[in-house]
Amino acid sequence: MPEQPQVILSGFADEAANQKTAEQQFSAFAAVGLQYYTIRFIDAGDGVKNVMSLTKKEIAKIRHLEDGYGLNVSSI
Image (cartoon, rainbow, N blue to C red; front, side, top):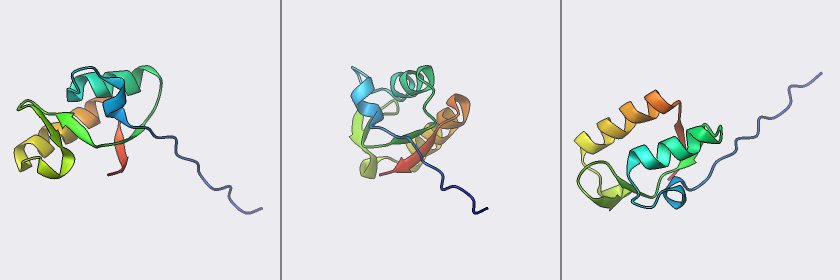
């Protein structure tokens, strides 16, 4: 029997957080059991930025937080 395709549920995490901090976004998604999110606007400690404007240091911080919350990026 062929393997069934996997369906990935994802959402815009910045819609779940008032201040758009990474911690707020990730805790909201973890609270409802989602493992994937679309990253758009996020505050990694130096103000809200579009994902394409993040520094390498901010990206590293976000990746570390994603691991802690059990999250992965589904799309940009």
